[in-house]
Length: 145
Image 1 (cartoon, one colour):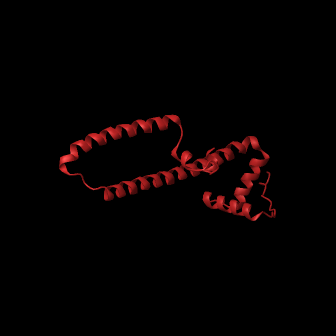
Image 2 (cartoon, rainbow, N blue to C red):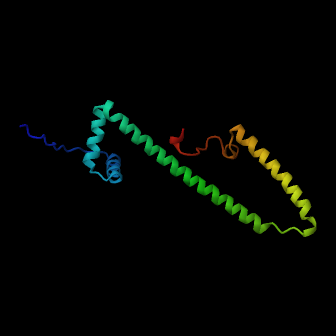
Image 3 (cartoon, helix red, strand yellow):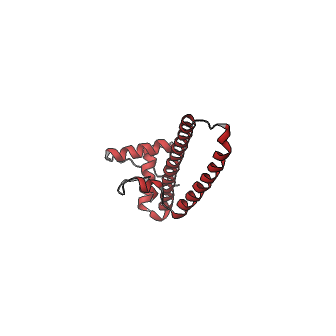
């Protein structure tokens, strides 16, 4: 009967950034740092087995970062819109009853124009920040490209 092979110990010196990355991955996955390094080395030395799993893990991490950024951006957009509406309602005086019908008709016409302009803008693919920010300003997650 063969004895089970025991794992052998090896002392390795890592760059501080790489050490932190291994430690963070081990904490996230609730595994030992040794197992994280062993898995990474196994994937490195046998790419046909481990590469698919590691590539999937990297894609999932990128997707998670993208979703987090989208969630943050949606929250910022919603808060911006809410603040604008609140400011507009505070600063705009109420109309007298005599002119409310004319104001409603004008508002409906302006709203239709707004919706048409929005539709054209969305169809063109251009975004407002492209017109507002200088061309060399980075926008968004570098992993998004």
